[in-house]
Length: 401
Image 1 (cartoon, rainbow, N blue to C red):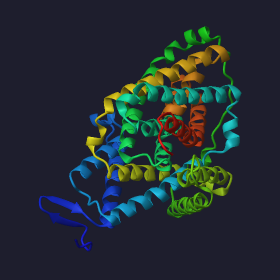
Image 2 (image 1 turned 180 degrees about the horizontal axis):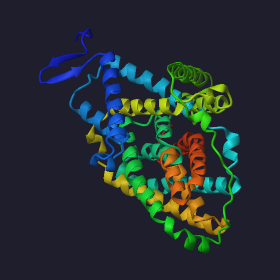
Image 3 (image 1 turned 30 degrees about the vertical axis):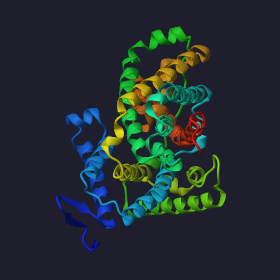
Image 4 (image 1 turned 90 degrees about the vertical axis):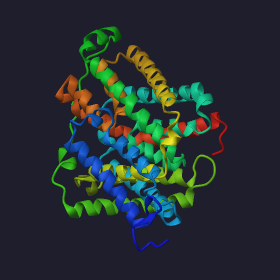
């Protein structure tokens, strides 16, 4: 096979055999679907599935059709992409997460967030125990990656999948549950907004008083080429540094090389949030672009045949949400939390930055910064929480770490 050409004819299947063609096609696929999702939101397909899920499914279809060759060069490129770009993505997301600003949310909102997170963690454990006989030995990885997403975001999901070496096909299950069950949950929380007064009377909630603001100077502004290159270089350098720390400190048991790598880059991102790098616009945009590329890359190594258990996982996702809702109701009664606090804490975990501000705006536009800050808190705890869930599920399932 000659690698001088990206595309060769092998019988009836055109295969992209070179690393350059492999990377170029993945970037083009992800970029096209991002563009379509932003410029054609009225299309019916985007009403049911977000672009990131369509990216995963499209890459699986192309892989199943034989677009990419499965050779050593592409496999090595795939491994290097995951090793460097996942930590870089996490670092870039955390550049906007200053712990001091997050603490301004106050004890009630922080307590609600922690209760919401605990409900998701316990829900994952319950769902695993209920459905593992139907889902097989690999179910722990799906629930671990889903926990990473529902405690933080899709970037945390990919980070957990990379750190725990969860099979690529299992990420497809987690993405489907994250998309479909989350959409139902968001609709329910929005539908409950008119019932806030009745809920608050039941929970004996005290009126919420907040003075939370966001420094838009950090996150806004015009994107410029030098700062994008600087941010990308920072992400890659941070990923290399975290990889070296993983090699130094990683070992057997919980703190493997991949786990230490992700934890190290998380700590580095939180430190760099207090440097002038945090004032550069574009870090979240660049991180999201890397996220789409990572999802397309992972999907290029899977197939639809690996998603036969999707309906069962969707039911398991409902169980997780029911357990989570039970935790929130108990907390609302005991801590006298209002419906806004419960809803925004829940969605800051399950929905993230994309949807928590939407729910906050449904109550009052003045509360949007609260939704943003709580969702950013999810970025901080999502990866560690997903890793914890994964390790506990491995122990429950008798899986060797």
